[in-house]
View (cartoon, helix red, strand yellow):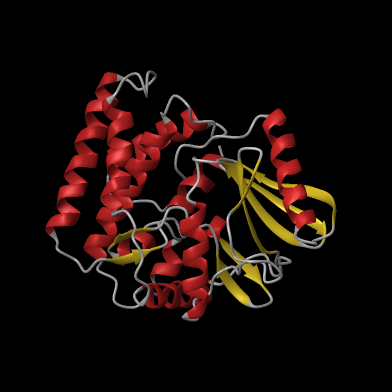
Length: 294
């Protein structure tokens, strides 16, 4: 949900060529590359070798951390998407792109049930407590949002009153969450339904570029309400603050001058309205349904 950018078509062509070339050099047969998703990274399904490739411009990715983390989490039994087992677990570079190669999973049933979602997230968090990797704190994500809001050059369309409101809310929530002194651990960072695959192996989490350390309620603030109801030991007051925080951060990213999220400005306005309306704080999936239904 961070500032959303897409690759230009000319860049997509080069990215696909880089991924295809790397796969071929590793004896993975490719005669087709299907673009599954184009945002900050390009997601491709390579056929007939059936590999899931993620491609990003070198220097704009955290591919090395993702690869290391995926290996470590798989070793401790976490429900995560696996790296492609036929090749070395590396970040491959070509023509200015960093490419990582993953197992492609055929989608199964359309939705993971809230119970299974909560169990998978609980298992992920338990495994993450066993893994020692350097990661930013969740407060670094808040600082990025505060920078967008605080600099009119980065958010020129944000009205002054909204700028003051959003800046104040981000700062207040950061302090309030920190003051609670809740236990911190490694988190996914954005375990929303878009980063959870429904596979024949059960639900699997993908996309660890947003990993950070913080309270588990920060992760839970990204998932549907019904999932939180099945996750044990939730601090409801902290979850409410984290939900507000996520609304405020997403609002900030939608006003970023470089943001290319579809209907981003409308999302930015609606997230601001939800923050002003007060509790109960809507979840991200509720906000998406509300906006899609308009």
